[in-house]
Length: 388
Image (tube, rainbow, N blue to C red; front, side, top):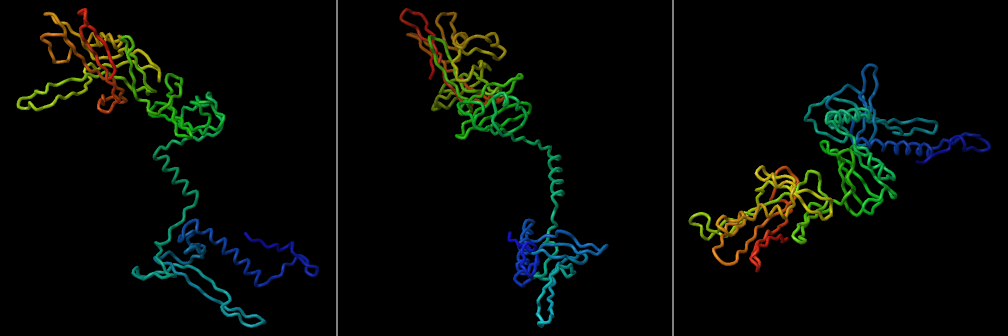
């Protein structure tokens, strides 16, 4: 902002006296008008202070960014009243040298047309003080029970991140704990209905997560495409591998039930249809993320609970392979029967990951496994698993 040195600017004849000139007064007025622009912070039109009757004091209002005194008792219209005054000096008369402007309340019919100097009082909002605004914010926060999230910044070792178990955002600068090859990232801590969880985000949009259970944190593991499942068979043993799974995720075993194409009278044209179903209500154990392991049954429907704790491959043999009293064998759930010749058959099994209490089979990531049975040249029955 421009500035004038009134007291330090002097001459030999007039020590410390700044010369009063028209140009100097205009300089002062321009500075005042510049400060008036601060009124736009509250908007174009608003009332800062209402006038009072006892004692009689003018109020203050802003009209199109201009700060004006406000007089009179409250009414339905506000009007600007201007007055010009001439000044007489030894040099003559200065016509309309001074102009005063004041806003005042006036009462008029509500259908009176508005002008540049006459407006409805409703056009002018009452400005709120910072204290009043903050009181309203506090009332809203208390009503909604808003929980404040703490934002932390700095270099954080892993021990420091372990202590963040309340909702917070931690901006970890370069030099923080090395996680997944990164030492600068953002960690968001959540408390989702008692489940404490941390999610780490990097500059290249990689994401890692971990859970706080049984009083300790799990390891940070990648969250990108984690709810998938892989399988392989080595010497008759089935191995599984999956990504990081949340505590509520489960690995379920599904059957694929075949329906004969002639099912239903008069519908011989009907094609073979298959549907996956959770018939055994069987679940398999989860392993460590991205590590091959041999799955075992950890839960099953009531008729099959005696199979809990068994490995997947021998378990499927017990459930699917059947021998007939009359001789021969068959696959449970497969309708085809063999009357003569070499018998060959298979049953399809599905392995999927679900993340909800409902068995949403249609939306889970499904892996198909085949249980195959056939007689070898020596007449022995061979039973194997294969991954599709």
